[in-house]
Length: 399
Image: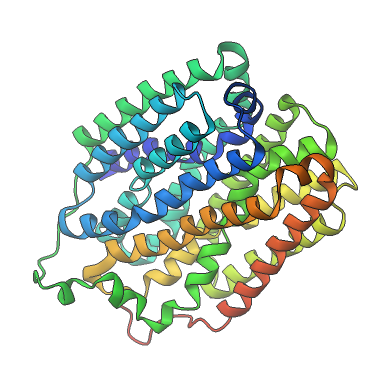
């Protein structure tokens, strides 16, 4: 499975890139397409919402047929077609639709390897492997920062998009050619024997986990993916080059967090309390930014980096929930959790776009972003309180 994981990692690198690159191209898209900050936020949210909605058919396909054909088809046609549409876009509506299409195309490229980890590797290694895979994929987050800004300045953003279209198609074809499906378990064709999404939603052990999955990753992803650019521009007056540099630092912190959570998952006696500690650190960062929104660029950079580092507990949350999945529904289980995680990013992005209006960013940016940070802090505090009721592990482990 080594080659399969390596090829899928290339797809996930591109997925991470596509979810974060709008922050760097914001000025270009505003100038050439007439996109407002709210429309850019809606475009970013469209990626996450469509990605999340696609998790339901992706989960069913994973359990029934495996990852190879479905991942190759969606990534090639969805992500490739969406990037081409974006390269040819002339209006903000084109941008929003193209980002939604790219989101659908990227929807299986994380779940496919996680499905393979769950099926072909020891359960105790699930969290570590998932964390390292996310860390490798976060290279795309880095590429969507200062390197993208340099390429767009040198060649123009449309030329960069055409190049990414070719690269995306090549990766999609490589997935079809080289990825191998894990051996499928023999199960009954009866839906109840396979474990439906409804069955998973009825598992009370997962109820305290769903809310934190929907909010925890939404904060670093929302900040890095879009809000960091108008925040640094509106409050500190930074240009695109400086914004690209600071987004790079936050992206590197997110990679470091993904790497760190893997060993911590192995060493920590409690996944639940590891997640609580990570979430609490992000809450503190949001309170600090809310109170001292424009006090110091150094403090702001530090808080964004700490938030990026501590907010990458997704693999440990996934490993915590994984213990409660029936074996015949692993594909649907991981995609259901991913639906809450990525869908939460999209919903939070659209919600914050409704709260932080264009006129507020232009006229009172300090107050606008104070509101944003208070909103993030309060939401995460609430879901952390709910998560405290989660069980550490099932009485009978379903692995």
